[in-house]
Length: 193
Image 1 (cartoon, rainbow, N blue to C red):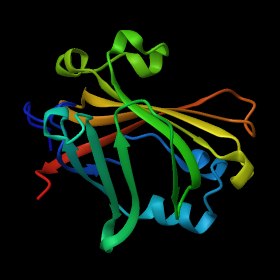
Image 2 (cartoon, one colour):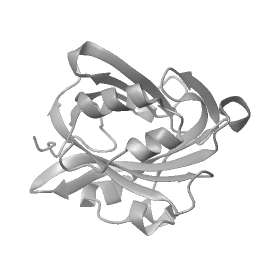
Image 3 (tube, rainbow, N blue to C red):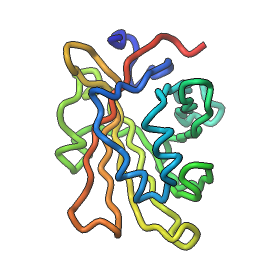
Image 4 (cartoon, helix red, strand yellow):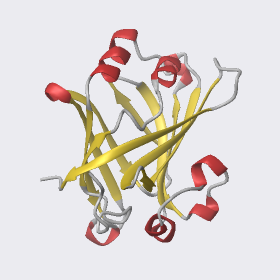
C-alpha cells in the first residue's frame, strides 16, 4: 500500500511491512555481522513488520527528535527494537540478533550525504524534510567482527507507489569486494496504534 502524503520523514509514525519482492538480499550482511544461520533463515522466511513511533523535537522533553522502531516477524516473533535519538551522539546497544553495536543518528539534508547511492532517488518531500541517517558499527573488541552500516531512510516512488525505504551501504573487514548496497522497501499498513 502506498504511504499517504502526510506520512513523511518528519511524521514517520506508522506500521510498515517489508516488501521482500522489491528489496535487496540481506543474508550476506547478516552473515558478516555474525548472525547465525538459523536466525538468518528465520529472518528470510518470515515477514517483517516495523512499528514506528516518532517523537518530533517540539514534543520531546529535551527538544531532541526520536524515532523508535519495533521490529516483529510474522507469527508474533519479536525482532529487534531500535531507539534512534537524532542528536548524532554515539550510543552503545546490545540486542539478541546483532550483539553489541555502537551507533549514532540524525536528520540530515541530502546535500550533506556524500555517497551517490545513499543520496539520490528520493521523493520531493524527503528532499525538503531531510532523511534519517543512522550509522552503526560493531564493537569489535566484544564481538570479534569489524563492520559498518550506513543507512539513509526516507520515501521513494517504486513500482507506482510511494514507499518507505532504507538504503544500506555495508562494509566489513571480511569482505574484499567493496561495499554491499541494498534497498529495503516497506509498504505502509496504517497508523501505529
